[in-house]
Image (cartoon, rainbow, N blue to C red):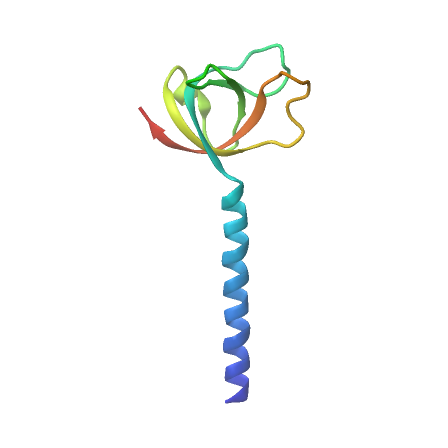
Length: 104
C-alpha cells in the first residue's frame, strides 16, 4: 500500500510539472493582426511582413505555417517576438508565427 501511495504521488508531481511547463510556453505567445505581404525588404531578416492597423511593420517567420497562403489577407496570428530583433533601433521586430487564429 505504501508503494502505491508513492507511485501515485510521483505521478501527480509529473503531471503537475508537465502542465506547468506547457503554461510557461503559452505565456510567451501573443496575438497580432494585420495584412501579410511578401517580405523582401532592406532589413535582412524575416520572410514576410505584417502591416497592422497602426501601419506598424512586423517581420515574420514561420516553420509551422505557409505564410504564402495568406498573402494580402487580413489575419490574426499567434506567435512570439524573437529575441535579438530588431537589429537596429527603429527597425521592425521579428515575429515567429505559430498558427493562424483567424483568417478573414
